[in-house]
Length: 543
Picture 1: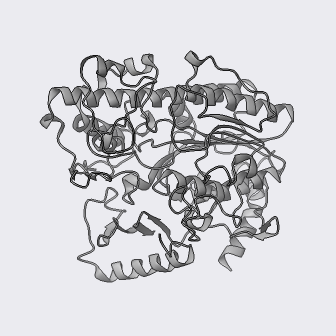
Picture 2: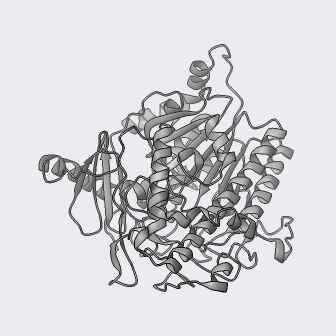
Picture 3: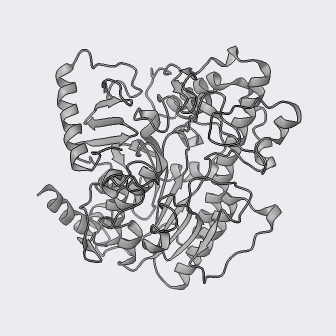
């Protein structure tokens, strides 16, 4: 019954928004354009408007003229988040509880299943031009559906999870194949810039067709391999020599100054790490001062490359926003910007090289200067990931706040009159579909090609846009046997095969004080809700 009522309310929401947000205008507003921008492995505090030192003036401007959410959640890792974001379901319901590997279990098929419908499919039925640019990462080989099979009129990007930023073929593809393609000189190609080029092209197509657009712009930045243009690296060449301890302290001070966290918020202890491929490499991230000078130089260079990637992505977004502004479309374009998970710790404090395996390489001399170029392959490791998630604990893969809390910027001048405002309402990527349905006047279907569709799990964020509460029973997570549930301000979590931990996020938003040993009844209550959710949403049987 609750879901039926929700669907009816969702269908009525566009008119309700028109009446409450702008009472003097009683006619329904025109369908907004919708631009959904997803960063890849961006940490909670990396942007300037979330406390970071990286130059992100374009994203900061969107935040200054819109909303920033303090408590918005993802699904711990790229594939599950992308499936959930596009379908409005928990990832296991969509069949992507893990990654793009088919285990033959209902929740782990590796790509969105026939019981799902994507935002593109829903909005296309409401007259939208639909396009996708960037990282798909929701296909099992070449046989499972790709973007143009799931509602997108246009696609340019990569089907897999990570690739060189400097080499276009064979990593990036243009679909449908009969469309005109851009030609990039090999020496000039950089994926983030190419994504902006195609994003602008696809918006122009919608303009020509006189249709509102839905565009899903899924950057692969700043995911490894860490590769950036020399000028962008140079801008940060000396910034990170101070180390991650100092950067964490600077970021938290800035977050408190801008009101993102309250006075008195303490910096969490350095997070632990556990190497997946080398079981003997685990522990707690070291203090920067304990590292040798050559190791510090190597790590500072890695973070400078990462910062350059973020800055380049911000410029690419700025180009697209400027295009919308110059065509008079920005005011009625609903823009979401978020990250697919917390910062990436893979796999230890020193980062890996060559591939995503166990290797660490200490770069010195000429090798140090070459880092970040087309022929190099690095991650930045758990120490910097810890800093990028300031002040939260842990990282991507985990269900601590550092793994699942994402920055979210929302910008829509025509309907959101608040500027430079925070929203403390709890939201989740499952809510993006419901919000798109509500603002577009589309209807979430009961079937697709005669296949029944799982009812929406998410709720519209429109109440939060107007700073009203969002009422929900709970939010829950599972990935690689890491699990969590949030009911109100109570959060129960456990790392894989470890005991439950209990936190009161109202007074302990950074998960510093585990109350599980003091409140056994609350642990029992919340774990039972998690178990029921897990059974209902295909978490079980787990591979």
